[in-house]
Image (cartoon, rainbow, N blue to C red):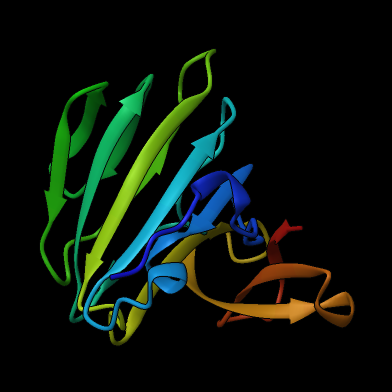
Amino acid sequence: MEKVAIDELDNWMGPADVKRPIGSALGTEHMGIRLYELEPGESTAFGYHSHADQEEIFYVLEGTLSFETEDGAVEIGAGEVIRFEPGELQQSRNAGDDRVTVLGLGAPADGGELTLLRECEACGERTDQEIESVDSGDALVTVCVECGSETGRFS
């Protein structure tokens, strides 16, 4: 048995104000578990993405979370859950004015190949991206695979 106090966990760098690695702290081997707290405009993900081998579930504890999906926009509110199959493209966003708290679950923990798409100003379209650590590990950036332009910075 493992037990953790979520508020005592480290906050991982990324596109969300708070991203706490619950699964890592509990030592889960087969699923990833994270708690996110999103300020208005923030996301749980670095961009529109899918995991080749991982299904993802998001349970909204507080607020309303909007998703861009292949089937259009979807909103889920407190007490609601949404599931994405492996390979299904999606991106969450707090489109409201209030903070959103959401529990994210992914299985298996290693989602396999990541498809990550973001708008690239230089290319004039949404392109494939890679995530890189910069500034001696003090920031993460998304970089366009086509042209090498930085498309996002997260610290």
